[in-house]
Image (tube, rainbow, N blue to C red; front, top):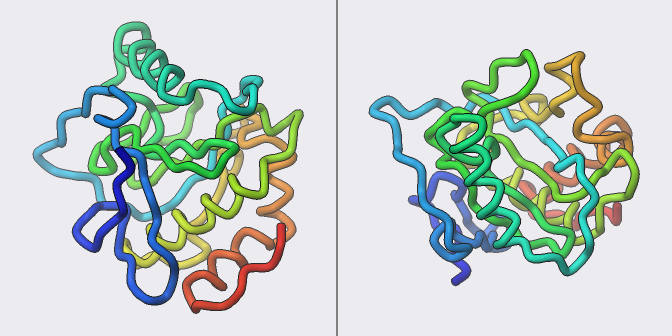
Length: 196
């Protein structure tokens, strides 16, 4: 089942400014939702990650997310998958950790207050797909609008940690060139998004 983000959803805030964002719910990929905290985190940033592993296009995303959730909980003893959203090369967005719950990390930065978006694939070695980039732009625009953020609140994992190459040089190039922020701004102002 694919859900459409609505104004009451934590990732939503959809209006006429940009198209509806479709997010596959945790239940739809047969995951188990994390428990919302008594005091939910306040989203202050959006932070971009990559999987850092080889991904075969057309792979079983639901199966991968189920394994990642199990590993996160049983091996790492985290409450859930460390990221809030996962974006496939086909451009499908999957819900992961509850946005009210701060993410987790193997590096030294504190992800409290960050909405964490992870793109599947090792983007140090391969390019993100066009569909993946455009879906990420749509999701970021919704998060910016919903949480009253500025474009400068969008960053990468590497901006907060010297211990990582994440989100990989090929994805980072879209940030450092300015394309990503310009694309999010275009989406927010109902303008055409330049090709990546």
